[in-house]
Every structure is written in C-alpha cells, then in structure tokens.
Length: 478
Ligand code: HEM
Image (cartoon, rainbow, N blue to C red):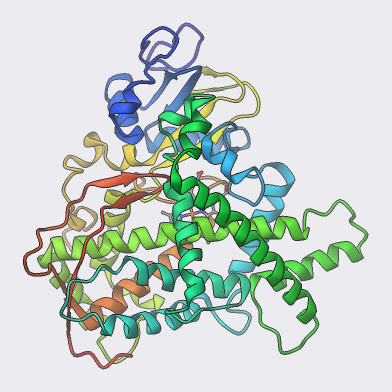
C-alpha cells in the first residue's frame, strides 16, 4: 500500500462535499477526464464518493491486470444499478452473470473461432462487405463525403451475415432503423457519467430524452425481428443447403442439450434473441468508431497517410484485396492502428463489480462496489506517454522500424471479461483501412477546416461528424 486508506479502509481519494461527494464535478466534466484527473493526485488506485456510492477507480495497467486477471474470479462481474445495466437487463452476454454469462461467452467464442472451418472465414465475410463499400464510395469521389453511415451499413452487414445469416443491399430501407437503433443504444448513456449515481434522476434523465423512446421502441422491434428469424432458422435446421451462421449453431446446441435431457438449459430462444442483440450492439458502433478515428487521422496527417500508403504499396500492391496475413509485414500500419486504439480509446471505461467483500492492494473493497477501469486514463497517462495528446504512431516503433508492444495499450481490456470480439474487430479495421487506402487518397474538402479530435462520450468515444474528400488512386481493385 503506497497511499493511506480512507476511513473505511478503502483506497484513498478525495472527500468531496457531504452527502454528494464529488458528484457535481461530473456535470462539468466528462467522466473519463474526471477519473484521470483524480488519479494524478490520488494515485492509480483510488476511491471517490459519487452520490451514495463510493466508486473504486483503476487508472493503471498494473492494477487493471491485478484486479481483472489475477483476482478475476472476484472482479470479473458487472456492476448492478448502472443505467446501462438497466437497459441491457442482465440478459444476453455483456451484462449477464453466472451460468448465462459463462456458457454464452464460451459458446460465442467457440463459434467465432470455428468460422473458417465452415464455408466462409471471417476474412471472407469482411471482404465481401468491403467490396460493396468500395463500390458505394465510388459515387462519392470528389465531393465532401461523411462516410459514417455507409461504413455503419457495411460493418452491420458483416456481423448480421455472420450471426443471423442475412445481408442487406446498401440501399435497403430496413437497414436505416437497425443501424440507428444499434448506434443509439450506445450513445444514449455516458457509461461512468453523472446520471449513474442518482437513483431517481437516473431514470428520468435517461428516459426523458427523445432518443430514449426511439431506442425503446427499436429494441422491441428488433427482438420481434429476431423471433421471426429464429422461426425461419428452425424450419431450415435440417436442410443440408442451409448456411453456417451463429443462429444455426445456437439452435443445434439447444437441440443437443434438450436431447440430453437438460431441462435447465440456458440455450433458450429468448436468450438467443438477447444474445444476438447484444452482439450487434457491441459489435457495430465500436468498429465503426475505430474506423472513423482512422480516417480522421489520415486527413489530419497527410504525412502519416503517405507512409501508410508506401508500406501498403510495397507489401500488398493494388492488384488484389488485402489479406489479414499481410499485416505481419507492415509494422508502420500496426503502429498506426495501435495509436488509433490508444488515442481514440473507443471503449474508454470497463465497468466491473465484485459480488463479495474482498481486498485489492491491501485496501478493503466492500461487496458490490463499482470498479471503474479507466482505459482512457491509462492511454492518456502523461507519465507513460509524455505527450498523449499528440497522435504519433512512431511511439510504437523502434530505431529499426520494428513494432514496440506496450503493456499500457489495452483497448479490449484484460481478463476473462474482456472483449470477445477482438480478433473480429482487428480484422475489420485492417481490411477496411487497407482497402480504402489502396483505392483513395483522403483529403479535407475545399473550404472545410481540419476536423477536430474532440469527442462525444457515450459508452464509446465518438469523434464529431466530419467529411472527407476522396480522390481515386486509379487502383485496379474491385
Ligand atoms: C474496435 C472495436 C472494439 C473495441 C475497442 C472493444 C472493446 C471492448 C471492451 C473494452 C469491453 C469491456 C471489457 C471489460 O469489461 O473488461 C468489451 C466487451 C465486449 N465486446 Fe468488444 N470491442 C470492440 C469490438 C467488438 C466486436 C466486433 C464484438 C463482437 C461482435 C465485441 C464483443 C464484445 C462483447 C460480447 C463484450 C462483453 C464481454 C463480456 O462481458 O464477457 N466487441 N469490448
């Protein structure tokens, strides 16, 4: 223990005002900068009173690993009572616990690994949508273009195709509400923000937003749609011509368990609906946001874009689509993507909880404490990075231009509750970035200013909307 515990034996931290603690600071500041600022004074493991809760904040990779990996059995749970947990409802996977979580997670990872043993690898799913995306962007050459929506459509199609076996034409009318409803779910609430700590206001403040009605309505609409899909899948389950998507694999597992007489199986139709719903919520906006940060930095730093293109020209060329294998020969690209993950910190907070009283670093952690892993705070720690506010891929390259791996970059968090879509997200990011760079030079449209790196803080950190100017590089890919 390097700092004295507070009077309850918990990690040290500011006292704040009577009754409310430091709660009102969160009205003036984003939760992530607030949590990082307190770490400068109180160290990387501290506690802070926010309304009725004393929250424990972790602001270093050392303590994150200690809690989520070494003491993972205790800390790999979700906090209860957050706005997000109310919306997610403890079903599905991201907010689930115990058997439902364990078995859903194991099964999902298993199916994700097995893609490729079936007819189509993850990379093929990705490249299929990349192909259509490149075609759609063709119409946007030479004019200011906000690629956000087309990108979301393509990324949605990847996961939708893998998980429920359908894909949409890019102009399909059905797409808009699905994309909007999924993206909105993550921008409705700030994961560590003010509203979480105010028992009544929490609900009024969240659900009074006009967006909330839309999100609520769309959730119902989405779940109904999944019910229809489940029925269609059941009809085709024994059809030798059927696909290999996640929903089929799930229904097969359901059948196996029922045949074995497991009446308490978690593989129910209802759980399947919530599970795929969760996978779409967490799998869409995160990836789209990552790519939007990539494109934002390309146009903010033409010199970096040139270096990326040079590496691409040597290692992939322009006659074929990229493969994920290509990346191992492309340290500059890897450094760029790592710097995007650090700077953008797409999912800035990992919120965990502990069901029982325990200790961490010698401090007492009462049962059901909220544990905030401030990933953004680690990625922006001045003591580690020196100049975190500068976008510099070079910080991850040694003198020979080889990649330096840092234990302080953990965009997917650590431990058994970490992101289970990491490899999918990495493949999507690499393929889309390379595919776009092969074909286009990215610029700032005439008369526009350089896009800002300011962000909106929901569950994900989103850059503000911006437009790019695409100029064709005359590649033969397509
Ligand atoms: C660049 C994109 C992504 C980033 C930065 C990211 C990051 C994260 C982070 C930080 C967490 C919380 C981990 C924790 O609480 O310790 C998480 C959870 C999760 N992610 Fe991702 N993610 C991304 C994309 C995806 C994709 C594409 C999928 C799959 C479709 C996915 C599926 C999940 C799931 C299911 C969880 C909850 C895991 C659990 O509670 O056991 N993510 N992600």
